[in-house]
Amino acid sequence: MIETHELTRHFKDVRAVDGIDLRVAEGELVALLGPNGAGKSTTLRMLTTLIPPTSGTARVAGFDVTRQQRQVRQHIGYIGQGNGAAHSQRGRDELISQGRAYGLTVRAARARAAELIDSLGLGEVADRTVSTLSGGQRRRLDIAMGLIHAPRLLFLDEPSTGLDPQNRANLQEHIVALRREHGTTILLTTHYLDEADSLAERVIVVDHGRIVADDTPDRLKAVHAGDRVVLTLATGADADRAAALSARVPAATVTRGGRTLHIAVPGAPALVPGLLADLRADGVTVAAVEVSRPTLDDVFLNLTGRSLREGAPVAADLDLVGA
Image (cartoon, rainbow, N blue to C red; front, side, top):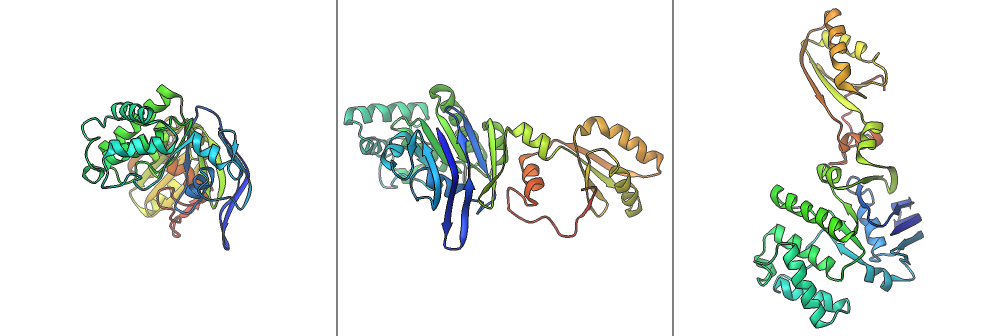
């Protein structure tokens, strides 16, 4: 459904997208992750024909994005970060108008609008003006507008931004149902890591306009992050001895901040009892211990040295032991 080769987009001296090779198969649900400015939205805008590439090639639904823009647009749905419906119009009317713009007859557009209103739970609000709808209702209306022509491929650019947790959960359920019931291929960008982890079968991490990782969420976490143990030591001297001892653990990376050690290591739950026994035998007093599974933010931090959520650099005063 999507295939790119050395796709680039430059804005004056800025390489927003710098040679992306991307392949998405029919029926996949893929999350595109990265900090602000990584090139995610620019990539989506090229794939949806909103802006032309500077160089490289891209085919979407079998059509070239520069030479066959009309055909591409006929086969895709695109839900951007802003609301697409006019605030003074009724939701149902907006859906019918969108269907007509895609060439549906009036009867077909009305029937399709009614179908989407029912499936997305908009029945009670469809005949109200858009300005009176809640954020979650508007977002579901945006999705309905993107689906009015039954596209084979749906682009979702940060669909949950600005929604409260309940509406986020509802929207995620609709996305899962959409793929299950219609086999729609979905490419989404998001800053909500739990959303990408729970929805996507494949995660692509982008930084500085290039793909730096591409795999399933579980494999990315296993390969690029590992489990994490947080030790809080009683004194600075205890922290010194604990850091030296922890660094001897195979495949462990130890990050120290004051009296706290963050130890990234595969299979942490099984290693902790032995590590604590060794620390006690060495006279080290452990005040607290916590074991956690890695997150996709840990993956991005390990790959780029920045937080996926904020794009912030790692604190300069952290000591890296065994890195």
